[in-house]
Amino acid sequence: MKIEQIDRKWAKKLVNTGFCFSDCLKTVAASLGKHCEFEAFCCYDLEIDCENKVMPEIREKVQREDCLEKYHGLKIINKYPEEFSLSELIELVKKKPAIVKVNSVYCPWDPSYQRIERNEIDNTIHYFVLCGITEDETQFYCCDAYYNLTGMTISVEKIPKMLYQIFYLEDIGEEVFPSLSEFREKAENILGYKGIISVSKIFESLLYHFEEHWEEWKIEGKSVCLAVVNPLCWEMVSFMQRGIYFANMADFYGEKIKKLGEQFSQLSEICERICMICLKCSHTGKLSDKVLDGMKNVLCYLKSGREKEL
Image (cartoon, helix red, strand yellow):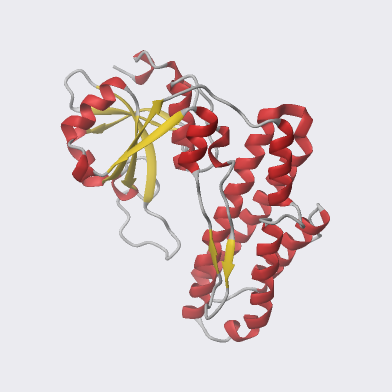
């Protein structure tokens, strides 16, 4: 039996946000007839710490669970394998979809499948949805919005080896979305240069720290290069994610706020390019001035509302 025969039509309408856990949340929320755009609306209470660090640390307070409950009436339950037996997982999936956090080395359709050697920046964590089980209870049906895949199966007996965590959603109330003015104020505070929690202030602090140490870092070899570009790559992923999330929220309101959504999309694209430069640096073990130029580019864009020429 293929997934298309299962009475869960939502599985055909996969939602891709570019981040596997959010893709899973949106897909499962859709199975409950709900949205998931505002999962990150109150997230990102940012602080930056540069003191005595090769690479500054950006601390984020993510409040996804609060947002899901407040705006979408969804409660996320998470369990670790030691708290949830395989038989309990089987019974759960018979009733509702479950999101699983796995070691992607054991996930057959993931690029990390069966890889032993990996680059320092590679991640072997992935999330996908278990959306059903065969009648003989030997195979889970799987749905993976991140890779835009349905119809895959994984042997039930293989799940324990790959499993880190289990998540599922409970419908606990009505959806109550932020008003357009409330969203606009929040988004402009994050994106705008004068915002209290704006990304501009974070990038300004990052750039100051980079310029202060750049020439010293460049001559200290691979270990310092990796100490700089690895955490920076993940910070850029975080800012890229922020851009995508808020662009998706802006799309929810339609044409009324289209321009602001495009600004967040642009921020995401610039951060993605910095990630690619960092990945190249990690392979060569040498810092490229393009990393520093990329940081300047982001700050210029945030200040002016447009990207400077590269």
